[in-house]
Length: 394
Image 1 (cartoon, helix red, strand yellow):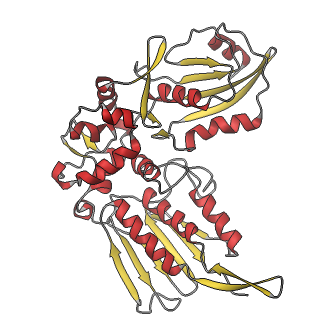
Image 2 (image 1 turned 45 degrees about the horizontal axis):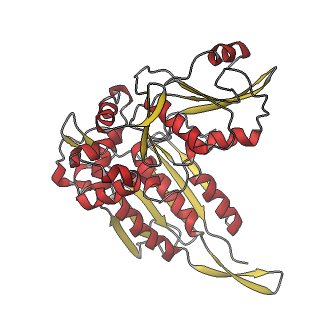
Image 3 (image 1 turned 90 degrees about the vertical axis):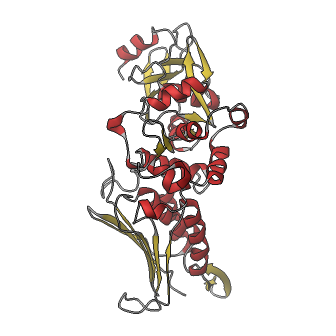
């Protein structure tokens, strides 16, 4: 944004698309504003702007905007408190009377957007929490052109194909307690607000079936993990253990966590030439992060499962579906695009990940710190495979 464009924007009064502040520490205020812009209650389909360093009377506050502060604003996107993830950009404009941080937020194609479980919108001159009618309007606004696979209706499925208890667990994590206590909506309406049910087609969404389904594999034949354990280094050997792990997504992750612990066996490592330290052959959390990445980013329309193969010298994790959106072999893993944003949101809400977009980077760091060689990634149009090499003994 140029100085002239910023000056013109500053002269506008605060509205659904503009908020000004001189605070550098009020993260809640920043996040609520991002939520308002993403929800775009007025359906203007234009970006909203948060200007940090501008008074309400449109004068500059004479601030210095540090790189660290700009990073903290960028982190609003990936910290996981605003769900689903907002699309935003952050920049700094240097003006004669001071510096201004600008957060530009695009309207979401998957409303309602929540901050810490609450849906914030703009009502006239003030920010407010959406009521049931306003949430319903946001639910109905999802644009057909932006429908990802996970939010599309699974028209073969019925509400009875879902496990109500799983939804209650998920809802209690996704929605704040006050909203739940005041909730008089039907079960279908509650699920729809979290993109797990389609009001238009009166059926669960694909994400609803994957997350809450009694038998998701009936609807998505490739929705399972093929686990194979080999004594040697070749697939020509007969596996000494094998399993097809299926069910709702949370159950699959928890079963795989147990199996990952069994393959992350400990070994002795020499330290300072004479001391011994117990270290794992594979860091458990690195394998966990790579598996979660495969489950979230897989192509659920494929009949191919996620593969988790354990060999004597390595572990291979593969998922159907190549890199998505703006991700490419050249910018991986620093650029992230979610094939299944609702599932990504669910994995974060359920506590399986702490932040968006850091899983592969964290796994690489954990492997390096443990003494494992760097993982190898292979990309194709039909899938992604990562090979994790065992830490060599010393």
